[in-house]
Length: 305
Image (spheres, rainbow, N blue to C red):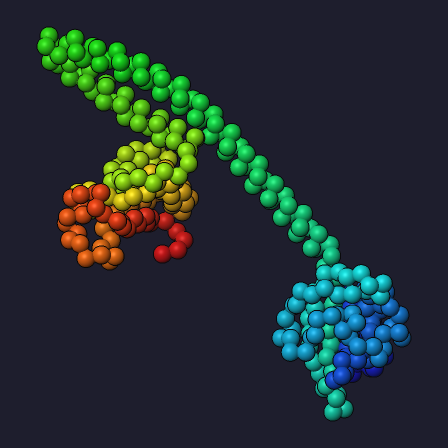
């Protein structure tokens, strides 16, 4: 059964989206019932008007079938967000443009609310992290004081047994070394919890990585192995130690997320000799004379190469 003109007009009139057809000059030649509802114009009043009075953005040249996000204008002058799909057809040697318009005010409102909620959740998370950092800083400070007392008394014990009992003195020395490592970790926690202003200074980046690796290993967990591939000798640069540690921490956390089933995180350093002609061996042995270094962090997890 061939569709009749009345059936086609009925289908167009009952379409859930507002439909506007315009001729080659951009004058409206058809508007369905939903167009009257959306724009607040009787269909008879729309006929012959330029389509730009409803859709200020020109539709000519728009990709066919693509959904365009535009602002449409109602009869009272108010504007609303709309999604417009455009197509063309020819009849009786005339070319017409059909625009299907959908009012997406509610969707935009929901997306805005969702975005605001996400931003608020992010602010709340940052506040919790800040509070956690303050708490960790306070705990680390108190713990560091306790370690200082332990280190003081173990040092006395070591001196007392240094001549009398070599085995006991060695064991006390191991206790002192463990306390020193614990104190180093708490100092790093304090540096993160209470970072000072940027303070660039000459440092050996290899030494920074070696010392910071103890904290990274605890963050990575048992299923991820930390591998250090550091250039021989010292690698001196002038930079802020806390910022380098922060970069390493951020990259390590990203790598941990990418290796849920375990893997290897590799930190590699090498001198960058491209900026001057001084002998690289001289600068490697004297960190104060180095100017650049390459620091590479890679993992075996999913994601980008």
